[in-house]
Image (tube, rainbow, N blue to C red):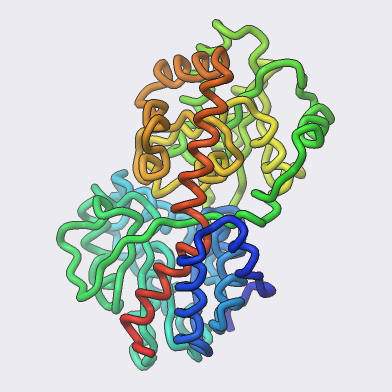
Amino acid sequence: MLHKISLGTANIDKYRLIQSRELIDEVVSLGKELKGLRLCHINSTPFGGGVAELLVSYIPLLRALGIKADWQVIRGDRRFFTITKGLHNALQGAPFAEIKKLGIKRRYLTNNLENARELDPNYDVFVVNDPQPAALRHYSSDNKAKWIWRCHVDSSQPDATVWNFLRPYVEEHDAAVFTTQKFIPQDLRLAKITTMAPAICAFSSKNMFIKKYVCRELLENLGFDRNRFLVTQVSRFDRWKDPFGTMTAYRLAKQEIPGLQLAMIGSFAQDDPESWDMYAALHTEANKDADMFVYSNLTGIGNMEVNAFQRASDVIIQKSIREGFGLVVAEALWKEKPVVAGNAGGIPLQMTGELSHYLVNSAEECAEKIVYLLRNPAVCQRLGEEGKNIVAQNFLMPRLARDELRLIKSLVGK
């Protein structure tokens, strides 16, 4: 059987302190209507990626609502995950000519077949996340559950060859979910296609409140000077996050703000073999500047440390050039931090109003915004307050639970 991630049960009532009564009451009501429903999310890694980050808090919340929710993780070797990384990149517009090779297709489909045979089938609804397990439904034809495919990446301009390969498997699902309307490929034919944005957990170790002096002390122990400005980017070691663009922006900003420090914090996931080469290249570049630091989940930087970095930083950067949503943007906004981010994918959903002035399209523009914010603390405070309000209203877990349970209710009835 596939590995099931061991998780507990959350407390939905904690959100009554920070979200509207109407939202929480609706979520609780949906839970009562669907009480006992067996729901399983499936993805390709238990740690390191945005989906895993989301599910580790989301599954316990669903359980608190009376849903029998589980999370199963598919298996795969390095060759399989190299192929699926190519598919992932291709959905975001990169070419992946290898998909034309019969052996590549066969390896992808064989792995999905093997995982389908090991899947615990005893659920009413499956939610299949992203392209890695997209063909599971094809090999589970006897299963009477409802199947939802959830795409977390910017698939607005997918590589045509890859999308033509994946689309028939996606169309075997009962519904498909995308982050925004513009991500939905125009030729996708399904009876039910909807949109819902991801969300963060306000009470997780990554987002819970930590006093600023504790955060500063932690960073000082890692070699940072608490008396100098710090800007931070938290993301996977992935070319779409444009980490070298972030470094360029930092160097340009440092010409105006001497002594500026940069922290690049990333995480590894077992389904992303490209990340190791990126990590090595970033370290090589960081070694050229004593005020530039690269950390990862393999060097002791876990969720609590990321929380501390975000709270202790003066500006958060997320200079993505493709982005499905960008949970780290929501995390920083929740902590009332000013964010300078790439004008890409799902990031503009979060950075509305005055925050939209800090969406950038180049390293030069990014540096300009960083310098402006560091010189204008009153603006940082105002943006921080606005950002937290946006996240509180739109991007916390109960809203995601409401959206997904509404969809499930429409598929299965009471």
